[in-house]
Length: 146
Image (tube, rainbow, N blue to C red; front, top):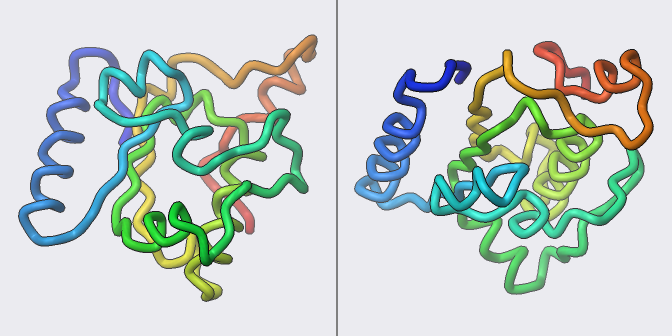
């Protein structure tokens, strides 16, 4: 979901969370930044998926299928991810592989619903000492190839 400030994105997130809960499913809300995570009563993506620092294209998360956290992630049906424009594509690939692994299947994201939200006209991912082309290349694109 893409929308500028004031377009009722937070209202939509809260509605989806309430609707998911009322139907007996679990949802998890996270954002790339701590401030955005606080505003959505969620956690950071690093906290939710135990992302490594730094995140490289071959990184893995510190979650095993038999761990308590792995069990929790398996139970979640809907992941709402805010401030998506700031998520580096490597981070998305890392939890893509994590969810497939802990759910023990070959479906994209382990068959979970991933709701990407934010203002895609907003801010790009931070690339330390990155050139403009590197920054643009690090972003999530509309057509991801897994």
